[in-house]
Amino acid sequence: MIRVTLPYPPARRPPPAGGDTDLRLSPAYRRWCERAGSRIQPSATPIAGPFRLSIALRRRSVRDDLDQRAKAVLACLEHHGVIRDANLCAQLCLHWNAGLPAACIVLLEAGEGAP
Image (cartoon, rainbow, N blue to C red; front, top):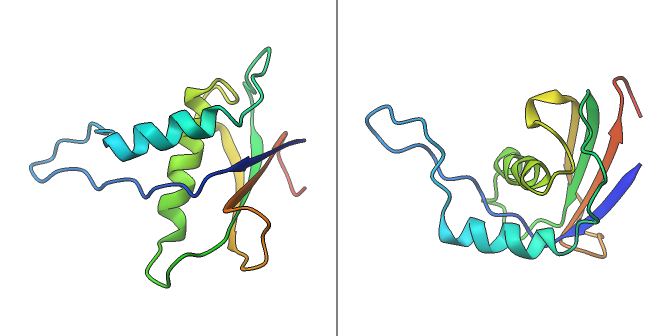
């Protein structure tokens, strides 16, 4: 099992009007991903099969959107070579936790099924 403590992830920006589906990464997301990457222990080989991911966040505002934070974490794990592809996520657990010692704690485990 891999455990990573990350800074609070940004929300993914919605695609622009007009049907353009390319993900345009904001400068804020790029800075966050760079900071988060410094906390991720590089893996010799990325997880190339199904995996389970649990993300706990310390909520900053009642307006925060939980699933948008998950997309940023998955993209970052893929970008830094921890997972081969975010679409291999077989199970995703997200929750707010006011008592966390960090803004975001990620648990990642290779394989399908319940942890």
